[in-house]
Length: 369
Image (cartoon, rainbow, N blue to C red; front, side, top):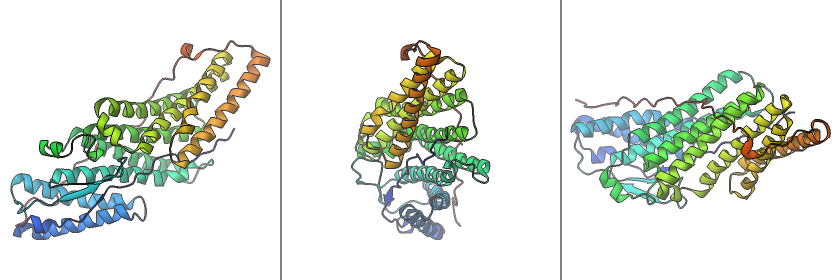
């Protein structure tokens, strides 16, 4: 039976910032032109964040700025150029429940928020490219496009993993911005959780592509269970290791993560039910489908984006239809004893998508003579 393919993912909004002129603060005659170029590239990046004409434009903008930004970082650490006064970097995170501006005279603060924006940009670029893949019929060049989409998702996860492994928050910055009172992007735990979420989103696409191609229900169940585990692990990590930052994170995003977990768990159990049905294990089939049908019921009370709620509601209707048909066939033809949830074998999770390591950009300059 055909199913409805709908755009499912979260569209990330970029952090915003006020302008900075590096050449006014880092007065070094040998680097004045390089600093002025860095200021120009930063302005272009912020403009691409604020007015992205396509989802790929911010990726290009950050790519260009990062090399110059790491040039500034390298020059400062080497003592090649000493600042007269440090620039005041001001950023507003869109991932907070109550967004407000935070400022700090710290180049590490700038790097953290720019890289977080880069991770969001890569994920959004993947979503933009994935939209044509949501049709029921195979679009032209689908495999090539799918690989490109996965590459963007995997690169996004790699950026967040780099931030998690290289926390840039100094003790001074930690005192200025305690947990729960700072952009969540300054939390290494938040970055690690974001990497899991992006990989989960990528695996959602893998499930959808598998359904288009007629992949076996057992393999689809493993893929869906693997996606569900990514969302669940991300939420659990934030709640147990960075509760204050998670509490300050935007409620709709937190509910989106929970809805993704429930949705993919429901699909995993549905696929297990279809696999059992194909092997005429009707008691198990009804049991799996019943678990699937009730798993996403709480989503109706969540404040998730409309396109996400619509996608989940459509899948829930199909699951209920499959359950009703299975119950009818079992009660009238096969007479299998329904298996309770606690006696069912849970779907085995499979991690299909892995990150691509973020290559720390080579500094555009270290010393200009």
